[in-house]
Image (cartoon, rainbow, N blue to C red; front, side, top):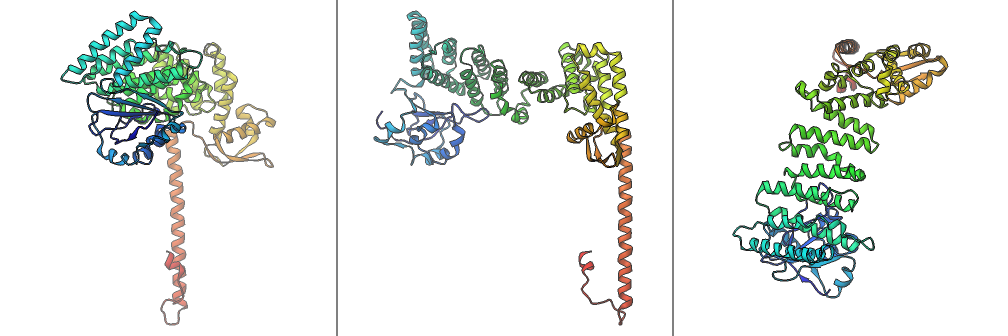
Length: 542
């Protein structure tokens, strides 16, 4: 490959950073900004700080451990937003020598985009021409070549740099790229296609028309997400790269994220986007000014659906609750839409069937759940109310009257009975310091010999806090889960607090009386009538 020589570096770009991390900028190597390098690295974020501090050279970036792709191009116009501070940091270290270059770059990909007019865009076009000739024949290649020459010349001649027409042309002819990957040794072609799309993504930063940018972004998302069979890993990776092309405040990020999320689920790769959902709340704050309420609802509903399909039912339930929370205060027309009613039914089914869900007051407070009461599925709300404050007998009576409801919604009665037994035990333990095991057995309708496992389960699942006194056959209770917190519970808490305050006042009064007695005794024992001069630890610590 030979020597690349000493360079000065200004701008810098990641083209394959993990989702949620900014791409950065291109590297300018020449002082006039017309020659440029760019770096694409799968592990870009890992070495980004050291790179910016000037601790890593181009030689080091090219080593196998970094997984970099180095590109060189000559630009008709200087890259904008050049960072002089970055150039000062990088200048002393960005050098590749004659001897070191071949060995250091042996496992890196080097794309020489040529000199003069043959810049990155031209080289990308030439690569696409060759591929079109192989795939579709000389006529297709000729048609593209003529269009490209026309559009690219117009860009060069225009007083204002507008690369959008060339971008559109590239996307027009990119539809069949994913079919151009041979089964035998596909790695090289995959790298070429990824590099070509990195070039397309870089063009978006030069768009002047925001409406055109929106349409082009959506079009690119649709192109990448149309097929889940052809190169799904590459398509998802490119969607993530597209997401990173835009800074956090920009509105395009939500749309791209939604495409990536849905595509990952459709392609059975949802596990690859799962780690990023922990950032969703902060991202939603970034997108707040751009999102409509329907878009927020759709996002949470889809995430819940994808989670359910991936087998994460508890997480699906939590996202579904967030979906319903966005209907608080909504008009009745919105609450009674078929899709909302369907999601409300699913929420109640999850709440009844998931063992970890034992709190129902927040579910019954949702407007969408309240609206369900007046529909043909209103009995589901009644079932929720039993789990809020009912007993084992209440659930048995409900089941006798509504067996079809359980069958219609695939609700397992025995699982529901297990939950109501635990909740009944929580009700019994409220305000009590101990509970006889025989009393518990009667209330949860279990035999006295089989009641202990239910108590153990209640303790392990956090329904009550306590321990079993097997010798005296009773449960010693420290605290218990409150199934609801309404006026009655507030009154109970008020009485408890009043009792605690009264006890504290009695303790303070008693300590004060004891202190006065002690001081009076010391005064009486002193011969001079003066206080005793002994070391008074109590006075120091009072």
